[in-house]
Length: 126
Image 1: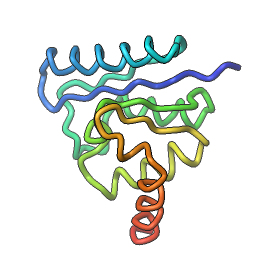
Image 2: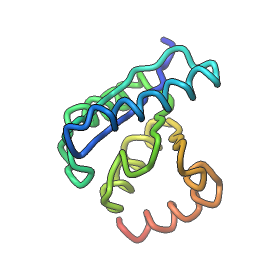
Image 3: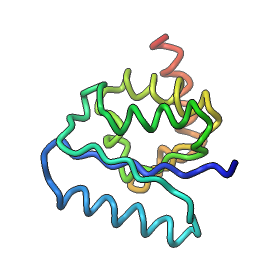
């Protein structure tokens, strides 16, 4: 089974323009990088501090089911605004399922330096 790339967008308000802007940026990235098989998960009017977001929950389920091999977001804050929740999400969903996280606006999260910092922080939160 060919795995998909997950695109994730979130807006804390019912702001169609914010979602459209994220969607454009994500799909342009996919087009520029020849990523053809993707699924877009959108949580509109959902706080970044909320741990119960329907589309994020579905994305996590799809990761656990082995359907996803990478997750792309415009900004790390789209996944979570809570560092503990973010770390748990990365450890238990993304890394545990051998997927890769790509952030378009935050190159620092795509570097090996961030991986080291993340691993150190993850040790402190467990």
